[in-house]
Image 1 (cartoon, rainbow, N blue to C red):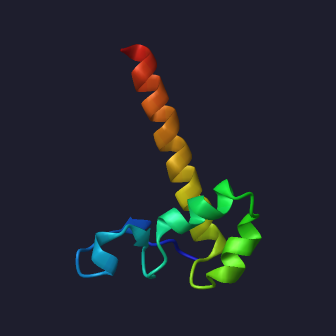
Image 2 (tube, rainbow, N blue to C red; image 1 turned 30 degrees about the vertical axis):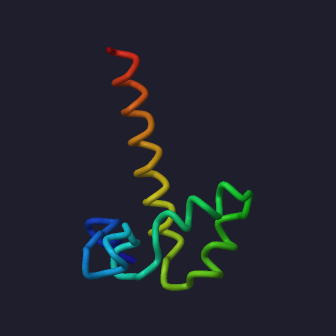
Length: 77
């Protein structure tokens, strides 16, 4: 399966600008809420079948890379 580029979209006309998984109406925040509650990724995917495992993992990887880059930037300042 080919992942959408970009992985996340946001538009004032869709869900008031809430960042969603591209091609869906599923807010990205919902994935992080599931994880914060200790739910496994499989539970999120079952609840939101419009999001593929590959798409969810790619978004998590993007968040990881962003967190690491921010920490590195803060350490360099």
